[in-house]
Image 1 (spheres, rainbow, N blue to C red):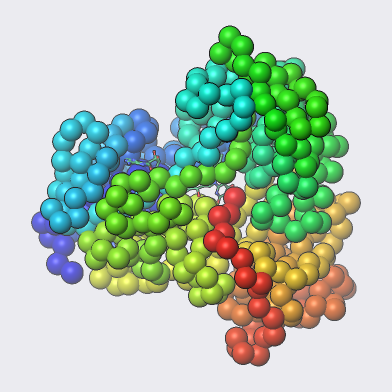
Image 2: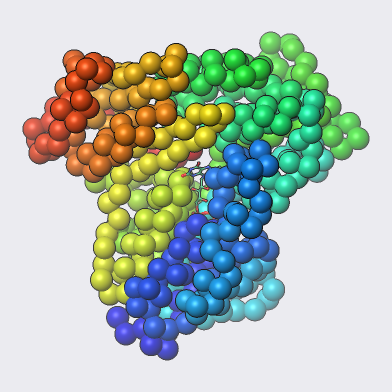
Length: 433
Ligand SMILES: Cc1cc2nc3c(=O)[nH]c(=O)nc-3n(C[C@H](O)[C@H](O)[C@H](O)COP(=O)(O)OP(=O)(O)OC[C@H]3O[C@@H](n4cnc5c(N)ncnc54)[C@H](O)[C@@H]3O)c2cc1C
C-alpha cells in the first residue's frame, strides 16, 4: 500500500495503541500517525498498578511505556485527554468529544475496556462513593493508594487476578484485608482447583480473611462512604476502603454503532483487520479466532495487545505477519511469580509437577494427552518450554508428567494435530485475567 500522504489514526493510547503507533512507523508507514487517548497521560503500563506501583516500589515515571521523545522521533502526533465519540465509516472520519472531526485513511481501534461496576442493593447507580474504587487507570490506583494506610480495613470484592494482587499489595502495606469471592474458589474462571487452593492458602497464611462462596447482599452507605457490607450468610463486614475487581467491559460503543463490533468485542483476523478494510483493531477490545484453540477468544493481556498491534503494523507496512501467538500472562503476589501459557478452559485433567508446599510447582492442563495450558509458580523454565511447545499441538506423557526425575523436555513433544488425542471441551468466549 502506498502510504505517503495518508493518515493513520489510532484511538486508545494504552499498550496496543502505543505499540501500534511506533511499530507502524518502523514497519514503513510513511504518512501521518495520530495517537489519541482519553486519559490525560502519556501511555503507561497497567500491570504494575495492582502490583509494584500499589506497593510503592515503582514511581509514575517508571510506569511509562515509552518516553515522550520516542513518539517524537517516530513522528507520532500524540493527543491525550481527548475521546472519540463516533465513527463515520462512509466519510472516513471520526468525531471527538471536543466537537472536532478527524479524517483518516486507516483507523485503528485500541480502546481496551473499563471495570465492570458493582451492582448491589444500597448502592445507587452512578452514586459517588468516596471509598469505593475500581482499578483500571493510574487515577484509580492513585485514589486507592491514598487511602491504603496501615490498619485500614480494606474489603476486596472479587477473587480474580486483580483482586488477589490488590489484596497482596495491601497486606504488604499493613492493611487489614477481607476478600469476598462469590464462586466456591478464587480464580475459578481461569485456573484449576489445585492452583486456586494454593493461592487461597497463601493469602490466608499472609493474613487475608479470604471468603469464598459468599454473595454480597447489600452495602451500607452513609456520608458518601460504604460503611459496611452485608453478606448472604448474614455477616456484616465494616469497611474503610472497598476495591471491586469484577472484570472488564469492552469499550466498543462507537465500534458497535458503526457496525464493527459485537457486545463482547470487535472481531478481527490474524492481521488485526476488522470487517472494514480501512479499520484495524487490537488489544482487549478485540475478539480473535484462535487456530490453536479452534474458537474465538477475547484475551485480556499485555502480550496479546502487543502481538495484535505488531500484526496490524506489519500489514500497514506491506509485510503481513499474522499473529498466531500462544496466549500468556503473569501475576505477581507476595514473593510468587505465576506465569501462565495457553488456556486451560475445557481441560479434563490437571497434573502437578513440583511441590506447592515448597511454593514451586507447575500445573499442566490436559485434554486427553493433549497439553492445553500450564500455570507455573516460581518455575520459569517449565513455563518457557511449555509456552514454546504450545504453539503447535503438544502431546504430554501424562503418566510421567509429575515425575521430576524425568526432564520435562522428554515428556512434552510436538506432534501433528491428528496424532494427538484429546480436544478441549466446548467453552464459551474466554475473557482472561
Ligand atoms: C490492575 C491491572 C493489572 C493487570 N495485570 C496484568 C498482568 O499482570 N499481565 C497481563 O498480561 N495483563 C495484565 N492486565 C491487563 C492489561 O493491562 C491489558 O490487557 C492491557 O492494558 C490491554 O491493552 P489495550 O491497549 O488493549 O487497552 P488499555 O491498556 O486499556 O488501553 C486502552 C486505552 O484506550 C482509551 N480509550 C478508550 N476509549 C477511548 C475513546 N473512545 N477515545 C479515546 N481513547 C479511548 C482508554 O482510556 C485507555 O487509555 C492488567 C490490567 C489491570 C487493570
